[in-house]
Length: 114
Image 1: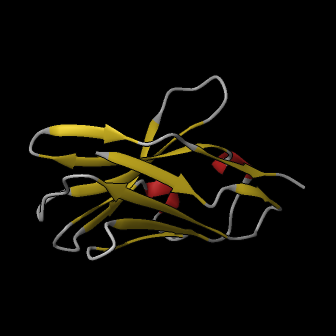
Image 2: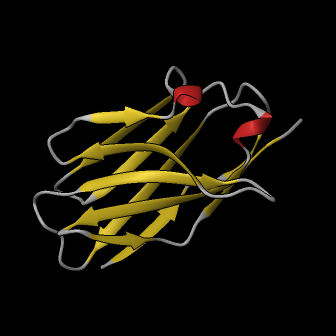
């Protein structure tokens, strides 16, 4: 299984970005896909995840600003981010959890700065 994330960049506070992550390889019908982020000097933190059924969960600090979605046909998970704040800056990683195994992609950098 391989995960490829994209969509990061530099954005001003209040701006928006959409991240994408495509999973390839043997992907089971039942799985969880999610996003984590790691700010400089901090540990990686969970941001959101979405079950193959469509159920979602969010970190409280992003709940009203970020939306996670997925396309099960394309094995792709998205993270729409609005109202970005400097504290959202970090490397964003996508994760796939299936059959008790975790898979990670290389991160994509998100920088929120004026």
